[in-house]
Image 1: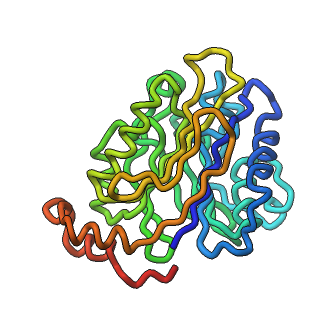
Image 2 (image 1 turned 60 degrees about the vertical axis):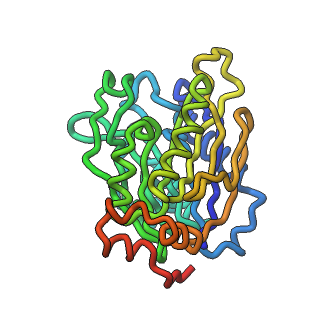
Image 3 (image 1 turned 90 degrees about the vertical axis):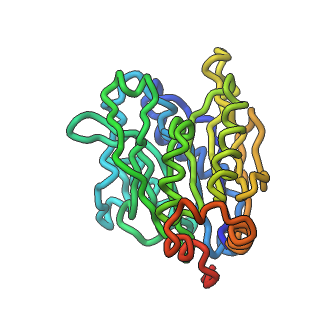
Length: 292
């Protein structure tokens, strides 16, 4: 079993020079009342660019090196890569795997990045660069990532995608071909296209017989309706049923627990993936030896 915690957050935007510290505080406050001592295999999922809000006008001051390895001193006293250091501290404090997201600096510019952090680590253990940058990102020197990466928690094989990637079904199919049984989505998806968000998330779960955990931001303080975010973070099962969901306007932690057995049974009873996915990979992704 995995316990999922989707932090549906209204990020303080990058025009505030202290936005990162304030957003870290908001994440901790939203998680404050959860008793993580009783959680065995927890995953905390944060929205796209949660520390700055989506796409600051000038990205350079907010970019970080997510590949950086942390010293013990840096873990205790964050100085430079604040988001990286915060995510590692949050993993240590909660004893959960944390999926954070931010602006990653590379030689050619930036990538829209998701980093995975585990307890007692010294930095991210896996990362994903958004394969399909949204239009405004391309004008601000963001480059596309190359491929899907999977990471494991016990028998769970997890792939991460980011926001606009949701519109490209082949990316999700590639993840399942590699053995994914859970795909996470970190987003800053607008309210004006909320129906697309809900429909596409369900479709990706159904067509790939996979769990989806999708976290999105909210922005009730935003006066411009075209810039409001849709919220509606969701955990969806392989049949497209919503396990739990947030609303479109409130900060919240959307919680849900998932197990492999329903996925295994559905893929066996309705084996549409057999003609698509390598049989050994499919068998491995349906392993019944779930140590969770």
